[in-house]
Length: 307
Image 1 (cartoon, helix red, strand yellow):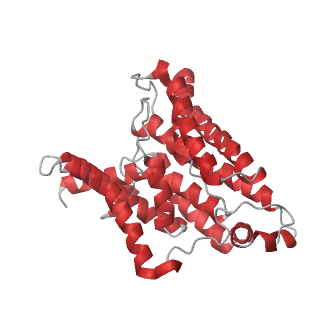
Image 2: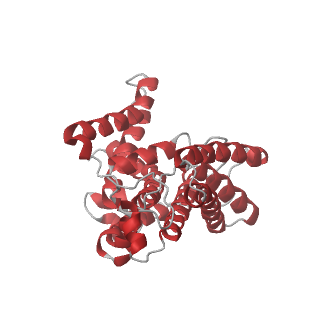
């Protein structure tokens, strides 16, 4: 295979990493019946928190913990309004994105343009990197968080579809009243899943500033949080499908840069976003109203004791 093809596929896998982490978190959140449009805000807060702490301590892994904490804290704020106070989750999520973008810009003023001193370096796995076809792409010179995202997708798929915990989350998202009648703490479960989604979005943002582009720039998420939201729907709320959806988007985005000398750069840059819209539209048209298989109670606040 041509070297350029290897490079393009490897870069597509790397670029898909933050999308996959954020999309996996949103899948779990929406499986519990909550919508969080604040993924972009949680990602950018994770990016600045991770970078600032890593730059201060000199340890990118401590920075990653800070990114996870920032994303989780922001998500908890959304959970308070959308789950406990039963406010409109769409408004709350949008407000969280605006808040995150503004706060990260304010905090990050002193860090703009500074490269990270100790970044997360890509590594190769001896033995596995020499495997035919997939070895060089998947196991050669990739970040630990890239492999972690693939493993997380598998673990979450097993949890959702083959464990009691997954059944509980899906029941809360499908019929919270029935879950409540069965004695399940619906509100607590929803809050925990929202915070979990925030932690995952924090990892996605931390990956951007600690590994993929080890620096800080205002608005460095560049709409990836919105794409992650679309990918959760495109994957039909399935963690394993999210892997392929993220890789597909990553490939299109990578090709947009690789082919700039042959096609107008503006058209190529638009391709990944256009493809996502077309894919979602095609899925809906092909299967009708039941195409998405969204949780029945998705986006509907619940008060304990409601029927």
